[in-house]
Amino acid sequence: FNNSRSLHFFLAAWPVVGIWFTALGISTMAFNLNGFNFNQSVVDSQGRVINTWADIINRANLGMEVMHE
Image (tube, helix red, strand yellow):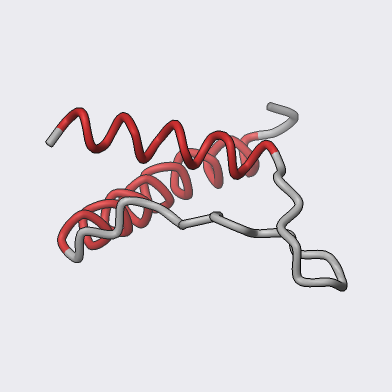
């Protein structure tokens, strides 16, 4: 760190950000929001689905979730 002010700012802000993200994660799990569904995320002008890497990853994640339950 360049000076004491930036160090103290980091030391003050780091736990605050951690608490925020912890609260966000707990509330997400409380409402059973496991993630976003990107199925058919990109559609062309004819209405046909253009598969992306997000679709493939989402399909794999859904399969892992089914195996877990």
